[in-house]
Length: 366
Image (cartoon, rainbow, N blue to C red):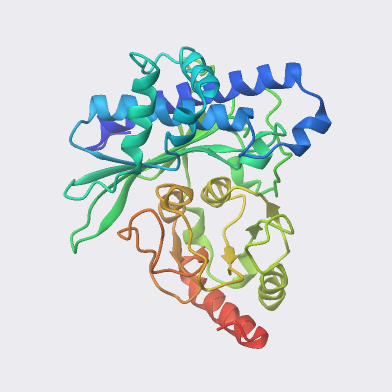
């Protein structure tokens, strides 16, 4: 891809591959020593592989990006407080980092320092890197779909921050999905048996590309994704992706009612992680998602969406919240000015929004 951000994209793609290697190494070592019953009972707060992978990948991304782009700000999910309180966990994270070629810490204290760079807001900085080391922690622990999200934001023309580059690594997603308009529905258990995965990326205004994440051969060229959402002119062409009956933050019955009103098969593609859902939308495996939180006070986290949702815009999609407002990325770590999400092909976004409003009014949720 020929773009003004060629260097940034090259660096981010390399780091995405190194991050995927870390995640797969941690996961494979874990499965060699654990029983399935133990896997099912673990959470992100346990001394678990997702904890080790989260910290190690955030350290890799933060350390490498600040070294390469020292004038940029960083925003990530983790802080190093837990590591400082748990020397054994810190030692594990530092050991795992040696798998990667992208960046190496001077010592364990350095690991903590670079992770904590991501807790700052970066006021006064013109560009901000936002990343989620492991999106889909529950599915990661079970060897199912998860993603590594890397986004670059820059100052917008009218202030605030706008997405300018996205790189998403999906270590368990078949990179050929979405070719020739197959449009098949996928779920968290739809795992690429070859172990090559997919990396999906874009620079604003230059389209979306996908290629193998690991073990890419010299003759495999990046595949540009068609602007498929641009071709959808009526609600008859809508295909859903959601998270059905797996998260208690959304209103499942309302999402189902919207799909019924639009004549859309439901749930369609069913994925736990938001980043995977945005990838699914960008590849044409779906073209519509609606998410209404149970409570107005619930706010989305920037690292679950920034960059990844830009992939859908680059193929002709429109994204707002369920009130029809543009997504505001200038509010820090949380999307404080928005409630929920609505993504659909641009030409029918209004029709989907109308169906959402009607369903919310029927439920008394506006």
